[in-house]
Image (cartoon, rainbow, N blue to C red; front, side, top):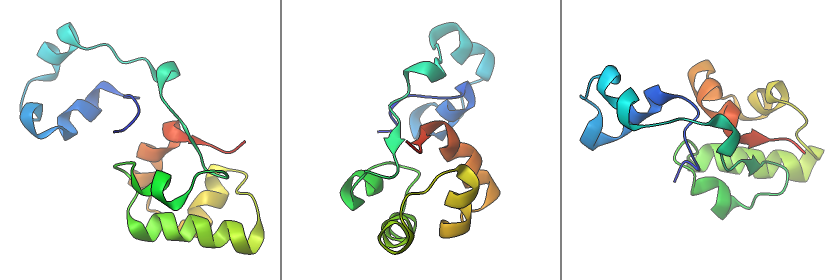
Length: 100
């Protein structure tokens, strides 16, 4: 559902393997941030946004509302301003967002 993993540590978000040691996971998983399916934030529908695990209804609605009112979101900073996303969420979302 994420569209790929940007960091190996994200594997700990998966309930079934959250307690497995990172050294063990490194042997069996490879993370390639270049293969992530990105969200085209200025084109994505509400349904597309909400289907991503890091988006909730509030965040998706904030993006849609801002685009209708102001236009394209040009940067991560502008995304943060229009959604009021907290720092940790922004760090998690950054590899998945495309502002083209």
